[in-house]
Length: 233
Image (cartoon, rainbow, N blue to C red; front, side):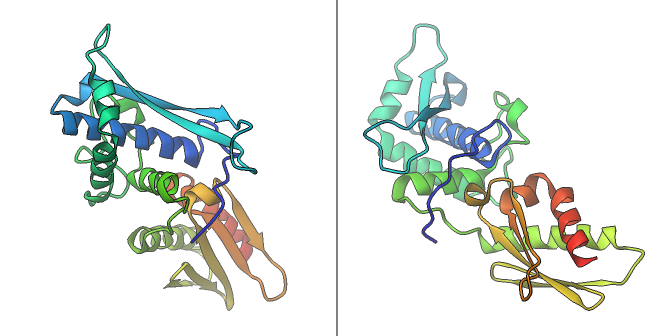
């Protein structure tokens, strides 16, 4: 899936913010592991920078990631991590891909120091952002994550119509189909870094589809379920 990365939504509650925050944590943990130090010795962040004259035409903004020493005056760990950047990136990938949690946990991204961000951290979004930064392609939603999101959506829609006709659900490669009282709607899921927080309903003849961002299904499932249920009603 070769898509242009839309960076127009970069507020604090967006998919990009969740991905950026999660990737910062992965990079810090990876650097600490490579250097053999405690993860509390390093911290980091990212910032959204305006596009400059030397950027590729069409670039909206740039993301600037950074690590720094938490020791007053610095201990040289951040500089050492930058000197081993390829190793840090590879280890970050391992951290993001080797866990089996649904978004984040103490085995991958969660630490005491980032406890206020625990509900925001998402290893899948961080991995997608890192892959885009490396190869310029946003990967598709993993089959496991997509199936879980569709199942959650179907359950929520079923609850909304619990006093009416039954709902049937048929998962597919890009989402699935929900049918109620003889009417069907195709659910098309888009990667969070493309779809942002969007829900697009196509009610045109032959359409009957709802395109919903992965991020909405993860962070705002009631809104997605309501949009689908209203379309089926």
